[in-house]
Amino acid sequence: MAIKLVREFKQNHQLSITPQLKKSIDLLQLSRLEIINKINNEIEENPFLKKDFDNEQIPNFDDMDLLNNLSNDLTLQNHLEDQLRDIKLSNSEKKIAQVIIQSLEENGLLQIDLDEIEELMEYAYSVKEIKNVLVNVIHDLEPAGVGARNFKETIYIQLNKQEIPTEELEIANKILFNPQFSSFEDAESDLLQQYSQDVVASALKRIKQCDLSPGLEFESAHIIQPDLEVIPDNNQNLNVHFRKDNFPLISLDKDLEQLVKNKKNKANRELKEKMGEAKWLIRAINKRNETVQNVGMLICKIQADFLSNKSAELKPVSNIDLARELRISASTVSRILRSKYIQTPKGAVSMKSLLASSVSKTRKVTPMQLMEEIQKIIEGERKKLSDQKISDLLNKRGFNLARRTISKYRKKINLPNSRNR
Image 1 (cartoon, rainbow, N blue to C red):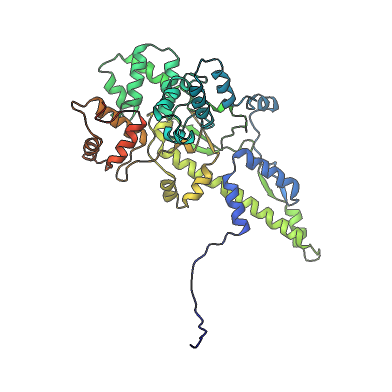
Image 2: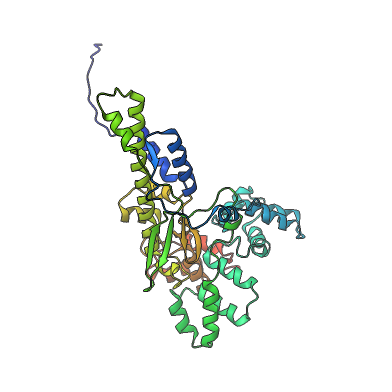
């Protein structure tokens, strides 16, 4: 048998990440405090970088203000666990409570599903037992609103703990959880048929005053410094600005650059590399800040009704939706959302918490909206409806949802199936 050598040519695409591209990606992920520290370190190490004091924004606080605003040594988790010691709980309830506490986001909300906690605990306890501890133990701890699974729930928990009049709490419950109300205006016009204007107005005012991030004051890992700020104008439009206060502005040392470029001076290779790194860092930081602002502006535009106190409902939007609109990759958006905050009229909130995924491909429906719809259908049923029947009812309204999706979200709100109802 003859052996023949054959030369073949193949063409394939391969993405190679250059060192500078990797560093750019890393910059996107840094929080405001982290990037400020990085800039200050680079200024010390690179002689071509200098602070632009002429254009530097003077912060509106002094050193004592900064010290007073430093996070408490006590973390949110430690604060909550300390409170558990004063409550009479069984061993199983304590174990569940501790796992829930350790699963909380830095803003105090619980943004993982209860079945994920069940899995974390290796199925030693059921979702029903976990939910019981969450509602009856965690939701009763301070700060009020901690352990809520969404903004609506944290608002309701805070109102419930304020011991407001029963009628106002009843109105707040309808405003927050009735899926028919898409905005506060819709809710107000409908509720005025049953309640007095003063009581409805008072309930709305209380809702708007609630803290959306009850856990932030206890975050000790770092100082929360929002990158962006939302400022409503006289026409109630939201203007989104990048916060320049306390952010170091850097520029290239032109005198040193001219010395390096002068052919009479034999600048060594290391100096030229430092100059190139300085130019790259300035461009990369400007690009990072610009991208953060663009992503933040788009989020605020989509969630304008929520941020301007016209609705308690977030509109469905995902990383992919933002990426498609801005014509950037979804992975870039994900990195931008990491540890980034927006100072809003409702307080500082993380950019990530303003996103809400849609459970339907044909209609924008958040998981919260779907659970409210399912609960409403079950509460109003004359005869017991199966998950398939509920799916059919919703699909006639354009939801396009499978039976298993209905089953999944029915279980999340701890409602039994049709046989057990």
